[in-house]
Image 1 (cartoon, rainbow, N blue to C red):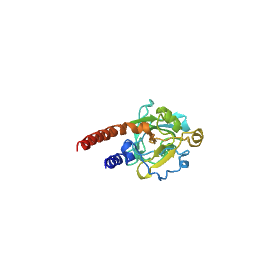
Image 2: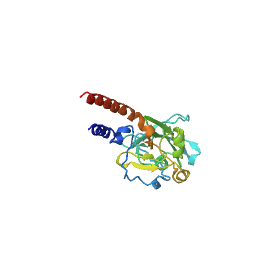
Image 3: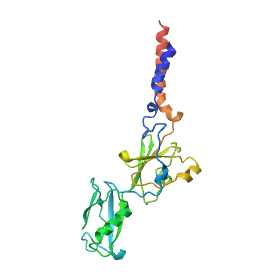
Image 4: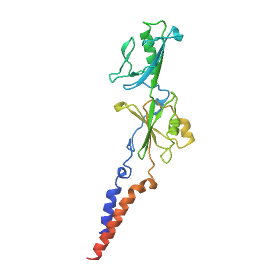
Amino acid sequence: MRLLIVATIISLFFSSCGFFFPELLFKTPKDYEFDSTDSLVDKEYRLRPGDVFTMQVLSNNGYALVDVVGFNGSYLPIDYIIHTSGYATLPLVDSIYVAGLTSTQLEDTLSNKYSYYFINPFIRVNIKYTRVYVYKGKMTAQMVDLFNNNITLTEVLAAAGGVQINNAKRIKVIRGIGADAKVYLFDLSTVESYKKLDFVLRNHDIVYIEPTKGPREVYPTVAPILSIISSFIIVYTVFISRL
């Protein structure tokens, strides 16, 4: 009878992985079908609402800087915000829909718009505040700035302090939001997997390094439970012995 009670208590505590690892994020079932990594190759980031960019307008195919905001030749970069509607308000051309465009496509679009005002305009667009979000579990997370357009996964991991005790075999990258989000799984535990899977990250990507699930990680959660069970057994034993 005693063993049955103890077994029941233990099963209640140990039946769920979620009990041992409540801090786990972005959980996926064992049979979850991750998106193909082939679609990540050389995909330029597309603007979305909330993004901020600056632009530089030059005429004569880039030989003369144009002052489109009235600073009389003293050029100061101005931040342009993409509204929730997907539109951005720009000098002279008013509001244009820019959500979903790459920076290259936006430059081409603006060149066409400003051709009504300047001779052979040349546009440079710079997307500001580009970053990825790295989660390591155990309440550890940080933002890593993308200082150029070719930052790879391994570079971001290095900037975030490495993998440490986390699981290098299960690194998830989430790209996009809502129903359109893509989830990719990577294994960087070996040199061969690194050669095959090192790739360029894009603005707003989420990198999740899944924590390991060994005895060392389980112990802090289990120890208080074992203490309670041990105390219960002692009390129960004393109680039974006095019957």
